[in-house]
Length: 110
Image (cartoon, rainbow, N blue to C red; front, side, top):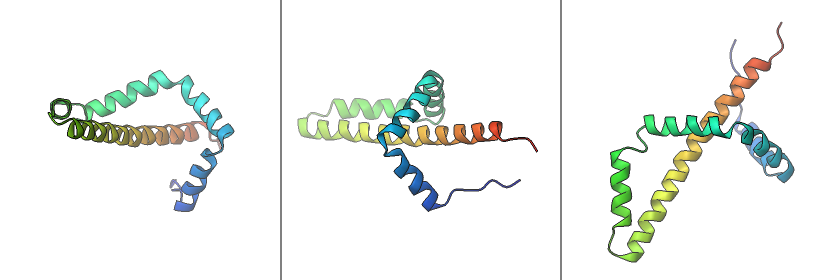
């Protein structure tokens, strides 16, 4: 059984659908029910992927101890943006796989 991959148009339509506040609020409520479990998976994934290891700690220390205030602010903002991007990518991957898993478990039997 081959799994149908969504087209770019499918993905764009799905993202557009999430811009509807009511639909997003329903999605957010569903996710909130399992937020602790999803947070645990996200943390484990980030930790096992090396995103929050000694190198990351060193970059944080370097950013917050930069003597020049403007450079320090830029460095901290850059770290926050990178962490947000990584968290979003991992979060979307987890969400996508969760949706596929739910799809597989709720398919009618032949």
